[in-house]
Image (cartoon, rainbow, N blue to C red):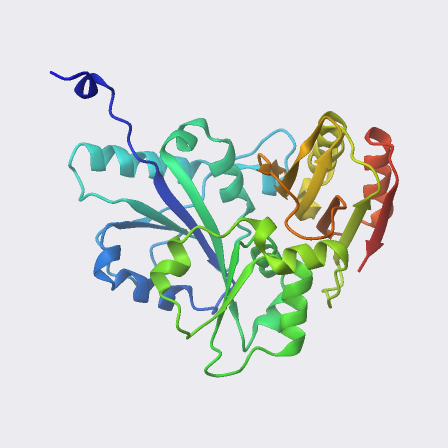
Length: 338
């Protein structure tokens, strides 16, 4: 037997997409379209409640929400035990042949759910980290009712703020209005935005990995000068550094903000150069209490080589953020609040 045959078999990780969007945004319609494609027959779909989505799919799993509350008591920082149990159960049943095989997973949230606990669970559960490959958060926004939903419902705001890809639905009934587009720019200007119906394939929209945030033009522009209409309690705080901090100082500053005000830190992204690693640029990404590993770039993605951060927050002002960062990274910061 050759040496190659003695090597342990490495199983490919299962890509997983989180599909979210407010009530009536069209998640059921999109899933029906995607699952009707023969190439998506090996997709497992996890939904919160059996009656929520009228889908006839062989790999449909319904779960009732079960959470493990952490000592902080913060609802955005709880582990979704139902998601962990369901995914583990699906994989075990697939591997022993009890159900048909699948090679990808869609986790669909309810229309009134904040997706942050699911993202937190996928990020921190050690078992899931070994078997899953996170693809993207795909958020549907209704072109007809989206502006009103974002004004009135904090869950809709959270769904947009955490998105990697925003799908605008029902543009056949109403074109994307300027006020809705401006609000989406303010809440999440770095996400890909696709209008439906359109030329893009639904399969690609769900399972094509979102391009690196550093390559997205809106992310670069907004990190310097955000400009948008917001709901009353939601703010954009943009920071620009004159000098690079150390990685340790920055981690303490951002980690402290996430630990103390994670429920109100909807999203943070940025491009930074660190004093102790000046030859690379770090792409920073955080959702509420969860801070992700940085994406390292060999060079700045644009002509502006300033380190900058954008925070999308609920009732956290620029003064609070500046105070926290100045305590651990005493370098000149400038801030603007929209």
